[in-house]
Structure formats: C-alpha cells, structure tokens
Amino acid sequence: MALRNILKQGDEALTKHCRPVTDFNDRLCQLLDDMAETLAQAGGVGLAAPQVGVLRRAVIVLETNVPEGEPEYIIELINPEIIETEGEQEGPEGCLSLPGSYGMVKRPARVKIRAQDRTGKVFEREGVGLTARAFCHECDHLDGHIFTERCDRLMTEEELEAYYGSEENG
Ligand code: NI
Image (cartoon, rainbow, N blue to C red; front, side, top):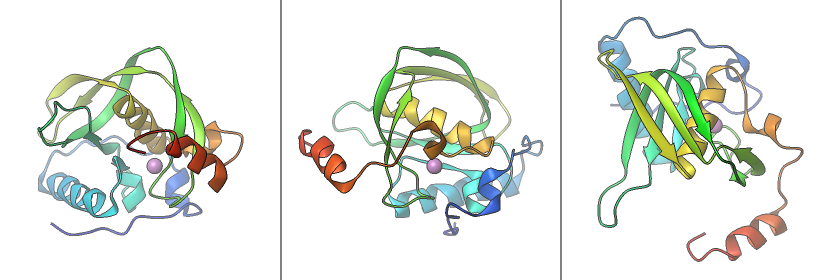
C-alpha cells in the first residue's frame, strides 16, 4: 500500500465527471488499498478516486455507526448509485480537498446505495447520519461537485466553535 496525494480545490480533476469502473483487476485493488491508507492518514470519513487524481467511479466511506467497542470499517463503493433517500439532516460538512473549511449542508438522513464491490459483485447498503452524509458527499465528487456548491458560504471559526462546543464529543 502507498499514500496518495490528495488534490486540493482548484485542481481540474475535482470538476470532472468520472467514468465507470469496468475492470475489476489488481489495479483497482491497489487503488482502493491506497485510498484506505490515505484516508486513515488524513483522518477523514470518506475519499473519492478523483481526489487522488483517478477519474473513475470509486469511493470509500468510513462506517462510523458501529456498536460500542467494535472497530469502524471501510465501505468500498464502485460505480455507486443512490437509489433511495429519506428525511433530512443539516450539519457542518468538510472535505479533505478543502482542509479546515466547513459549511452547513443539508443531506438526507438515510440513504440507500447500490454499488459493486472490488470483485464486481453488486450489493445494496444503507447509511444513516454521518454515513448517509458521506455517501452523498463522495458520490457528488464522482460528478465533479464539491460541498461548497451546496451551501451559501463557509462557516466562520466562531460558528464552528459554537457548533462543536455544544456537542460533548465535537
Ligand atoms: Ni470531499
């Protein structure tokens, strides 16, 4: 495995519509392994292939909704499609391509996604809360969209402090 460079806002790769993954080969496995290592090192909850300069429809999301004492784990989504959404949540959203920036973004509270795994097998998967938000955020990347397009402005430091200061584990 190897760390990959995370592209920052302004890089053209982040504005491109990505092509489907068609070859479920060693190269894809290498990409997904590298993305997982890169995400762990960066401390984020999701990463899309275009963020590491690969214009293919592949993302990873850290599932943080796990029973107490059990480890968080990576969900790999190849050619993901959101097939169902329910409810609404609003909260600060950030992106590893815009370090330190957050904006209040509305997302569905629950999202069902259909995708392929690294072997090409189709599966469906539900996410709630932060996972639902990450599913939407990462799928947006595959169409060249960044969260700042979904909020009027970025949050100020004071607003961020006020938001997270009100949460015990913020
Ligand atoms: Ni992002």
